[in-house]
Length: 491
Image (cartoon, rainbow, N blue to C red; front, side, top):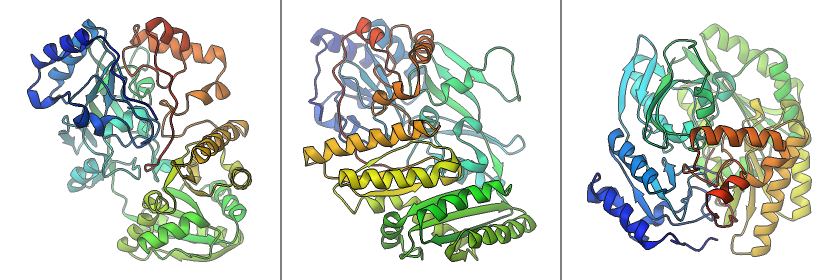
């Protein structure tokens, strides 16, 4: 665990406080240590650091002024949304400020004709769909933490959710961004058209983890609410059979709205927590949602049922109402907090693998769990191979912490070895910096570094995160050694 450290010269902090006080009301600046505690970490609660100051602007103009002041004083800026992230991506810099964007929370406009919504970064994911429902529309990406996570944070991490298989990640559902550069200069990226001249800078910003610019407005794509959606749940007596069933469904040409897998430990925890009617004796469970017209849904449900039976499903249940469909999903979306009741702490991993490798990788995770003597609950987006193994451990036991870290690193390296990558939607942040070289060559990392430098030459935006740019970090200022431990959140 980090020891809070405000090592910047006192005069810099005094200057910063004075300048910020000229453009912000007193209640928008948090400078007392205890009041800063809620901002010292994200959902990885054992990565902690205190900033010089926390600022909570309520307008784009205030954000612009804050950036200009910090640029003039060479003070790092760490943008922060709702703090639900899972990679220590918004952990403060000890010599910088936390730029909290939660007060920029207006839904500016919903254009039902164009099927778009213009929103500020502090708007919660779920509230977009709630506001659009009156027009028969919704916003497709739905992380399990959607009731709390902000759309700005979704932009930073390129979040997905249970419906990302058919409808894509955040990057596939954003049309344009209004951003401020590190110096406070406004830029518009993307637009209402399907294409635009020049380089496409929209995609690099989505998933850039606050390293390139500060997002102040987002235009997202809205979709018509499907005529019908139904979930078919299948229990299996082996993880291999469930993993193979995933490939069978995709191979049959069916693209479900969602396709999620849970293993025995996750099933039991979720059932105890939600009472969704999951088969407690199953070794693995698949939730497959299909949506569309009534005819499409009925045809696909019948075909998926056949595929599940052929794959060896021991239990099959189809939702018969919207209430039942929501209950089946509630179990999956509550799986993370449910598993949190099984141990003092858990480490939520986030690797992505080819679908055809699901059965093999889950077998290897089980083998590693036995090797380290740590239980693992698997609950993840099986349709696109986005793993979320939850390693159960005790943060009060240093040996447990060491084993959980090593175990987690091996899962990420295994993901790369089978043709996948070290993250699907949680990001790199501070947590996965050590695994970046296992996926990318030195030349590839250098290209990332050059992109970062093009937007932020002095490395003032969220320094020390996302990209292991050691040489530039040393040139900027010797950053404190980063080493911490993990706790859970939701995905």
